[in-house]
Length: 231
Ligand SMILES: Nc1ncnc2c1ncn2[C@@H]1O[C@H](COP(=O)(O)OP(=O)(O)OP(=O)(O)O)[C@@H](O)[C@H]1O
Ligand SMILES: [Mg+2]
Image (cartoon, rainbow, N blue to C red; front, side, top):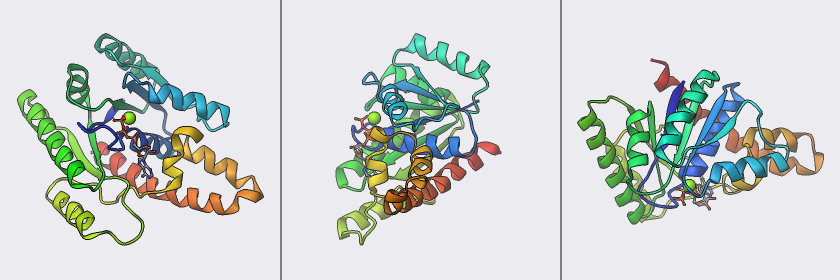
């Protein structure tokens, strides 16, 4: 089992949304995904409740509450023996012993960031913290910044500058765009399941197309992670 964590110092950087998207694309690819809810607000537990209500939960996936260190150890072992292919950990913002342990235990660290100057500052600080921790522990872990909530239209000069600053760091070769499908993922459930439900409803043809496009974008992000973890 490979552990993938979404982390950032900044609250609202798009960690949980990126994780839900990645989960949808891995599950769509027939992967068994364990979800570690390491944020005390338990967004993933709520996600599962919403998804079940909308018939949009993939039964190959399961949520494990892991918002305290001893729980994390337990659920990791539980998920590993249960044969999950991936575990995705959603962290809370900031630095903590729990976050540090997740970072040191991960095989892939995904740092999402939006494109405001404040977000970029926080993303750089997070990335620096991660690298220092990995160096101190002698660990070699895949890391990548994900440009999150990128406007689909033209970028402003300031957004373009923010976009360019990130070029010096390891980056996903694709962005996550500002889309209704992503904004609504927490309420609706797994995107591949939502898309399948929409495909069955002729009245939702337009929404189906938009959501399908979002799912196609996530497939590129999922493939990037899977390829990195293959070798
Ligand atoms: N690609 C996107 N398109 C549209 N909306 C997005 C996108 N990514 C994130 N959002 C929205 O931005 C807000 C913050 O995202 P999210 O909750 O994923 O951030 P977070 O880093 O997990 O926050 P927290 O630190 O509170 O856990 C949410 O309202 C979410 O719906
Ligand atoms: Mg979150």
